[in-house]
Length: 317
Image (cartoon, rainbow, N blue to C red; front, side, top):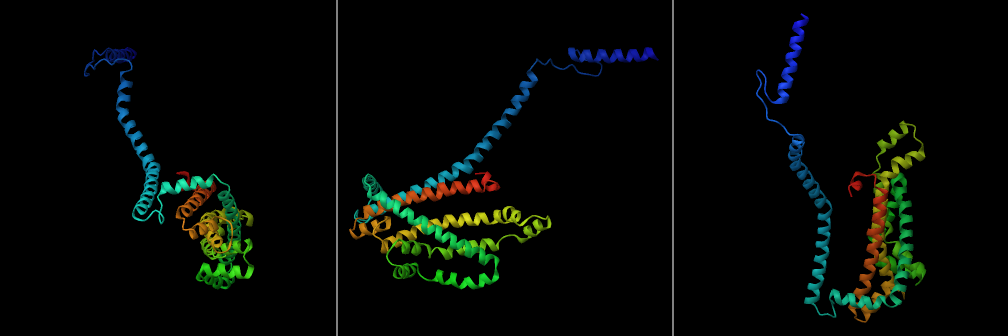
């Protein structure tokens, strides 16, 4: 019995050696000799097309997500510039100067001190008016969103302020307070308050109360509920309202400066309009537009991305 086991083991050993030599064995066909490293090369060659396709799809996704948006933005800006040039070609230069003519006038203006002093004055009024409007809107919006009695009481106020024309509100404030900076700030803030109040009010009403009940069931403190449950739901609405309110505030400040102030960008635009100098009008408007776009898109946009980087939509940006 032991002799038979030894013979079987020897036969298996001979069979393995025969395969390694490629000489074959009973019932087996001799295979071709494989050079060292050839198998690895074959595997890499087969994997290259798949790697190339993966890189191509990844690059295509990057182009679709980022470059596509940039191209659309560039096309939008070029279309606006083309419409401006078309309007300048169809209308007299005294009515609609070309973009390069406006840039030349703006370059001459920025070399002096007058335009920069007007910019500083107007930015100060915008900051004050925006702060007043945002503070009042936060108080009213939260009160109307939390309390049913406050909602019924202030609803009439908000609707009346929305219905009255901004011109009537500004002139009324000028008549009551006088032609001074306080009246200009109030006149710019009051028309913005009802719009921001409605946004914040609806945001507070949209809070998911089931999450609050779940947090209470887990014995979370009121501070923890406010910080971890309510604040993440309301913060996007507040930031969006702030960006929207800033745009409204600077438009209203220019309007109140045009009506009742003797300095600022709004006053300067009205002055050059009376002189029928549309080039200077557009130059001042263009400079302030660039400044406000920087504040709203760059600074507030960076703040929004930083505050909401935990959201999946923001992580992909």
